[in-house]
Length: 405
Image (cartoon, rainbow, N blue to C red; front, side, top):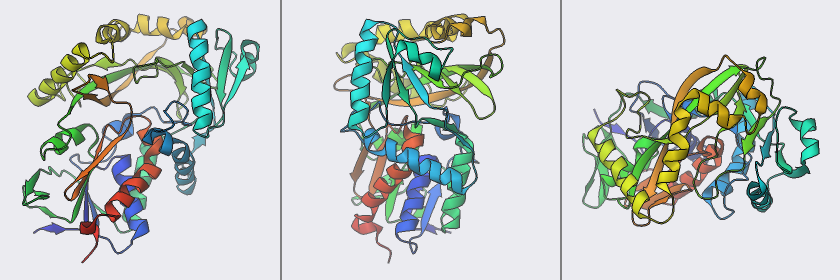
């Protein structure tokens, strides 16, 4: 039997769920189905992220990330309160390690102010009042609105909200789109829909390319490896981050706190070949490898990034001793901890723009025919998800084929 709907969403991650919620809130009469390839939610990025509710100061003011992150912080907290999910307002200090980073700290501060984020810069001697275990070069930045929560609990709350509004979800669904007479349809003819939203996360570019969209990009996954210890072993009060790299879209090795009483260091940003390759033996395919090599070749030949520098910087951190050594530049007493434990890795599904060799640093949304594709929905995708989903819903509602019969 065909499963008919007005809008079919591929992927039950936070962005797909948030889009479904926004659609049903704006028009309760819509029939919305989410097709999820896994047997349950939060198997990938939405359930493997740091759980940090970002404030929104990292991103260029003209970016979609800046547009959605600050408001997403507020909306995520509101959802958590509704579903009685704990949120800890721990705040974040961003510290510098040298004169160059101190100058970039000022740039970061000004960017955050332009984004409407509440921030403060203080001299080094005040750091002990915020995070006594951290060190900085001359100054540090304080972000009071950075918090933490339970990412999997938030995804479950979104699923509950979506189904409460009348949405339905189909697990173990292997959706394959094709283009037929100018419209995107289901190759298996299982689903019939008026508009498709491709929110498939790490698989979104594969779906879009199958219908000729996003062919200028390749997927190069980066694995984040973490270590954790108990808060008793390293009793940080705040999240501690370095000033991020000026070009590469990674935040560097940092310290986060978790809702289950852990202090965590990481991540690395290791380029790998499989977009779901959480271990060496699984989670990759021949097409994944081909895409990754395309991306690597573009990075090497393009002028936007130094791929060799990325490898030299990131691969050594796979070794726990070297990861800890890097972290001591922020919190020296981390080197005294002897009970670091491996945490489940996460994967950043990073798009590379093939013509320029540039790692894309913003969300990418593109529409063609009766489909909207959400590409490169990486960090802060979790924090940004609710207003981001509302943005996608407005695009869908503006499409004539999204109107119910």
